[in-house]
Figure 1 (spheres, helix red, strand yellow):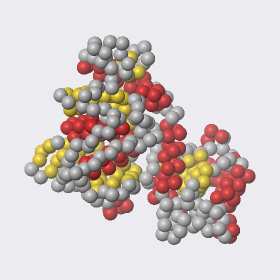
Figure 2 (cartoon, helix red, strand yellow):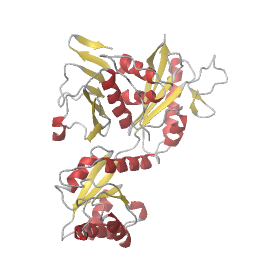
Figure 3 (cartoon, rainbow, N blue to C red):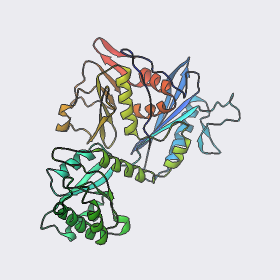
Figure 4 (cartoon, helix red, strand yellow):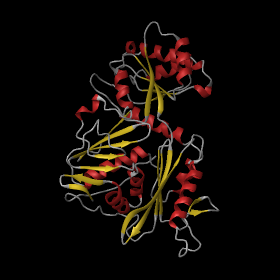
Length: 412
């Protein structure tokens, strides 16, 4: 998966971003596809007198096991029928990108896809201290497509049989083992080695298809010994990443979050039809997740309007994503939460000013100035910015992310 690389150089309150390559206002129609857990959406961006507008859109349920490419082709065919134009290459069963008769059947100029086609990675966390390393692991996983379904802290009464039954019942996709600060002293390794040995015995009792991938994010000096203990006990291999808590009071989220994100996409690639969708994307665009597309959108919107910071929320069907971006900082803070919740950890975040989806008024009051995309289509349109930044900005500004504020009902 790749993040979009949109460059916006603001010089005032709201300015047009320079289009560096890609589509211009003279290009043709652009197709944007968005894949969520429960639905597939398609929308058509059309050049109307030099400005791109949202010309049509359509959604279809996404059922488990259904081929995404077939759903998308059907959506495009229906959308084309409604508009009285051909959007699908029937023989190739794909969007019409190469037409034998461009005058009668104009081809699409670009296709962009933002896809998050499956539920988040189901994670079981194992560690030495619920209040130290395990708490740090939870914090790291909140910024990744992860759903923590269970946990185990090492104690003298830990039963391999009970642990096996728990893993069989919950079926996690990933096991994360954490614990200890980065310390080379052998005495600090023993508990982690023991924890890994116990989980090695547990995993050895599971069928290969039932075994979760194992990620180690504890004391880096203990990593090779923990890996050996897990493998010797029959649990297979583990992947070691940077310690989530290398020192007291220090939390290192990135490595574990990236490992979870990578595994999410390994699982997502198994979704029928996703590979075909990725092959439709026109260069320089790449397949991007809905969450990554939204994160980049929040950053671009902050820069475009000359804001010091911006807090955005994307309300997906099974999860909500909060994004906090600050001017002058490359880091984008991301936090996944359960729908219809406002965790205490968000108390220090700035006021919510941008929402894609239904605004949760009971949880987040609307400030004096805000942008609201009720349709929830902003992330999929944001994916267009990889190849056509001007078109993306024009459609977002004119059709989706309307500005609201004092003395404004809705403005562009």
